[in-house]
Length: 440
Image (tube, rainbow, N blue to C red):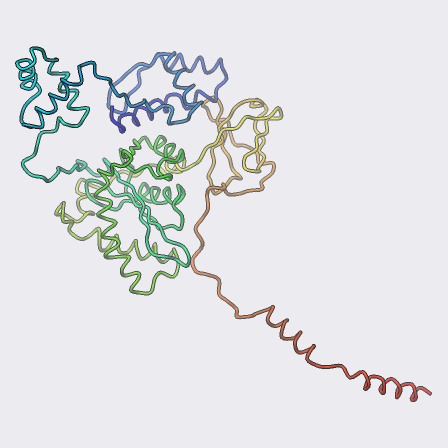
């Protein structure tokens, strides 16, 4: 089982057990029995049943180690065939790559008097990646999605500087048409900027069936995983150290560097982040999308719309996908705290473990789920923080204008002017005597 398949298995397990942990024991048992009695569709199209024991085991693993605990371990089989025989099989294969496993088995049997089964040889070749037939040409075949929105490839690129910070481009590219479906420049490489680019793509180009990304911290966050689970699309991560599959978006980034970033530098740089995003959007939509792509022979926008405009997901579904969630246990007074804020729940939720669902930029409104069901909206008792600590907005357009007034400099100049005048105490004495004589 390769890394992508194991990740799909973990997403399937997560979808089944994510709500069980918040339930009370009796309700959890009823929910587990219902899940065990039903058939479930796997990411690879099979319908399977999952036993109660397995569901409980998955729930305990999720509670103990999170999503990664649901990923099946990579199995490394220990061959029972003598190592010398396997080494001979490898030498025969490398000596003549056209030899099949069956032919190598016959050669070993003739020379050694005994040979393992040909399937054993085949499995060993597959394990050491020696089962690939040699190609007549050194060029490697390239995968391409068969239709628009079948697969989006996402990545991030460091770009020009805005003030003292480096702008970072998050972009999602449709694998079939090479259309830049969602993009956004930001000043931080985090999940907030990633979600801004993804949200733009969803609202303008539709929802993908799968998203392929690397293992950078924004792409492995729980928020992105929840987003994909709500949208019903698969989240696929490339194998660490093996970037194959992201070549199209890397080629797009090279075009961005050679045709867009260089022009930003030629005009003296962007004034602010808003201007950078406006200029980039104009370049993408009116230059890149309308120019014939060298690989497909079509402009990306024409290839993307060849089968008609895609269906856009409902706004309510998109809004739900980009909400964040955290779990808390309510007090005896049915009160929960989150990042310095206090919320009151329904009295029936006292001592219960609940899930709080919220917009990371507006913590004053929090939806509550308990036992896997909606439990209304929490009542805000005390709001000290309106924005989630990890949800930092980019600065607004432009920098504040400087007045040119140096307040401390003005004070210092007045101080010097006062201390520069020396006091003539003799003059003060004569002045006092004159006043006394006048009084007489």
